[in-house]
Image: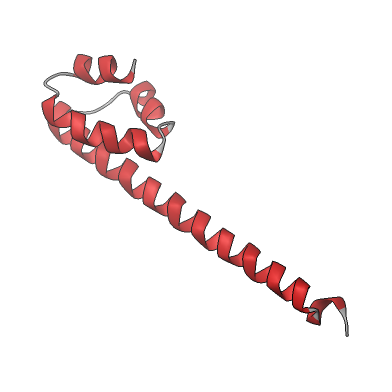
Length: 85
């Protein structure tokens, strides 16, 4: 029996594949959340500066979700800046 046909090796490979898929799905979800939040902010507040956009790109998925809810109350760019601080 070679290493590549070993049950332990095959199980390890399946675990790595599963983890990679999960990470890819989570990354895709976060990217989708980020794009939606940026579209909503742009529609509500107008074009965002590159600096604000970069700050939004650094937010976690949980932070993006919170921002998505908070932006409903924003009236100005200053509201967004305050939220990001």
